[in-house]
Image (cartoon, rainbow, N blue to C red):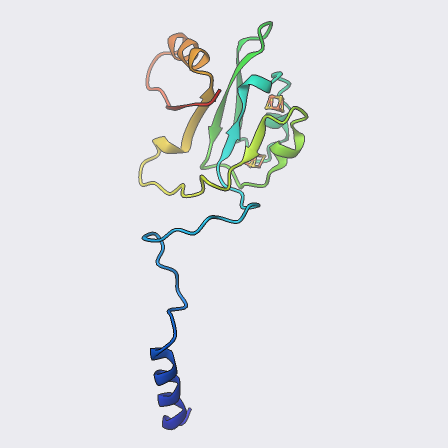
Length: 141
Ligand code: SF4
Ligand code: SF4
C-alpha cells in the first residue's frame, strides 16, 4: 500500500466510530434465537425422561421426587451441553427452552456448571434425601 493511501485510511478512521463493541461495559440485547443456558419449567414436567434420553451429551438428569404428584427436578450439566436444542424439540410439554438472556456462562470454578432446577419445596426434599456436597441449586417454579 502506498503511503498516501495509508494516510488517507488513517485520517478517515479518525472520524469514524469504532467498529468494535464495548462489551462487557455496554451490553446489547442478544438475538432472540440465541441458544444460551437451558431453562426448565418443572410445573409442566411429566417425568417422561425423553429429554434426558435424547440428549446426545448426557447433560440432563430428571430426578423423581414424587411420581404420583408429578414432582420432578432436573440436574443440568452446563459444561456438557452443546446447546443443540434437541431436548427442547423432544419435550412435548413445553417445559424446556434455551435462554437468550443467560448466555454468559464462563467460570473458573466447576460448581456453576452443575445446576439443579425445580420448585423450592422439591429442591429441599432432594437435598434432604442426599448427603455430601451439593450442587448449586437454582429455583424455578
Ligand atoms: S441443548 Fe442439547 S446438549 Fe444441551 S441439554 Fe439439551 S439436548 Fe443436551
Ligand atoms: S421431556 Fe419434558 S416432560 Fe419429559 S421429562 Fe423432559 S422436561 Fe419433563
